[in-house]
Amino acid sequence: MSTGIWILIVIVVGIACAVGGFFGARKYMENYLRDNPPINEDQLRAMMLQMGQKPSQRKLHQMMNAMQQQSRNTKK
Image 1 (cartoon, rainbow, N blue to C red):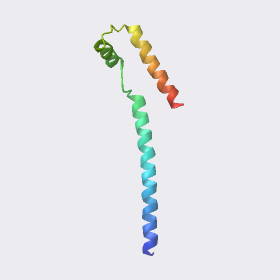
Image 2: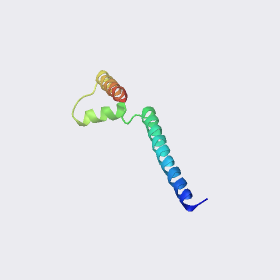
Image 3: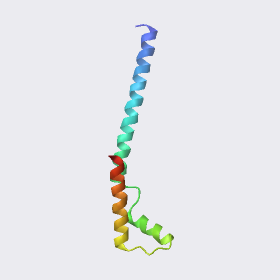
Image 4: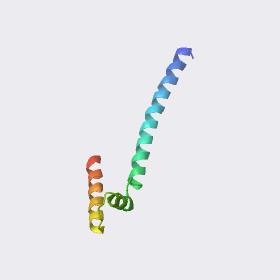
């Protein structure tokens, strides 16, 4: 094989690996964030206490549901 063909093969394989790696990493992060949401009720309670609000369980539950609904709507 000539040198030009080897260079072409290396470039094509490099591009294919970069594209595959990008989509693989993207899928992994989507699954990770779905399984491990970035915020939970304890963190939300702490934020509300820092803001001077007294969080009730009902309000925390409403806020968590609203956040989950928003994340579902953005995926569609």
